[in-house]
Amino acid sequence: MHAPGISIKNATLTYHNQILFDQLNLEIPAGQWSTFLGPSGIGKSSLLRLIANLETGGTISVATRITSTNHLPLEKSIAYMSQHDSLMPWLSIIENVLLGYKLRGQSITKVKNKALQLLRQVELEQAVNKRPKSLSGGMRQRTALVRTLIEDKPIVLMDEPFSALDVITRLKLQTIAHELLKNKTVILVTHDPLEAIRLSDNIFIMQGCPATIVSVIKPTGPTPRNPTDVEVLTIQSQLLQILQQTHEVLS
Image (cartoon, rainbow, N blue to C red; front, side, top):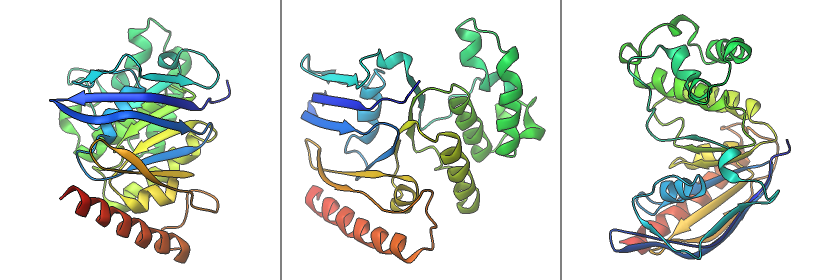
């Protein structure tokens, strides 16, 4: 299945009497990495949950339309990774990774070897039979990443997927995720401009209340980009200036 794009039309969301989005229109390109970048609390995670058709805690306008460009049901095409790992404490790591298949009544026989391979790639091969309580925060987050990857959906939504990792592990996991999600439509929420530049084809800068897309940055060159590359560092500086301006607007 070719990964579709996502069309967002008239997205309006009110949360605690505050309008987060008001008739927001946005096109997410197919088969590329797109990132939402902006101040905390502006609605990046809410927009991601809106796309995934998950509970936002707010009120959604009936005019809101979020569709895939191949006109197939979005909910069947999406794998979603939230900020919290949401691991089941009574299940082992391998059982947590395969939980989606079990809940849907699907056979895990064919995918278990792939799950073990992914766990090896993220250096969790020694923890497959452990419970989440015995793992560090970074290990739990890596488990959640593998659980997302094993779903093999054409659209992948990730909310701060690398935030609990140290810098070196983060770079390594970014590279692995990028390789495994090649040609999929990926939407990433992050607070890290360097992460956005390293992985993204499109960076959507959010600003204001209600939030709008004030700028779209399209870094050049193959991904994942070298974090020490001069061009990458130059774009990072530009992004930091834009983000500083958005904070000044909010304050």
